[in-house]
Amino acid sequence: MSLDPKVDEKLRALVAKHEDLGRQLADPAIVSDLAVFRTVSKQYAELGAVVETYAEHGKTGKELAEAR
Image (tube, rainbow, N blue to C red; front, top):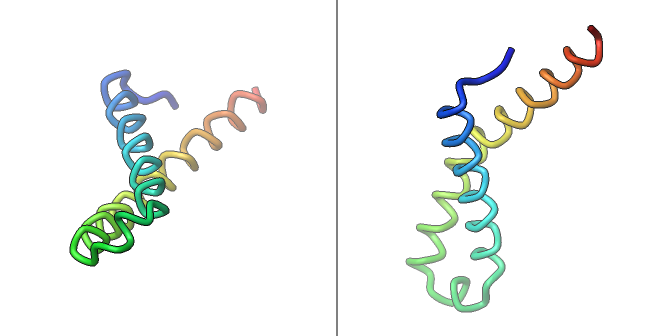
């Protein structure tokens, strides 16, 4: 089952945002500022479930296509 292109585009943007937040969490400047670190960490965690579900959807779609 394929996603609507607009939904897929938005989900890809969220995946990119999640990756960017992960890079920020490794930045010493972010880690040293507790307030910023908390904000970035919270955003990263909030997007985690969406990113994981989107990845599972992609995997399931690929498996379905291969089964046909």
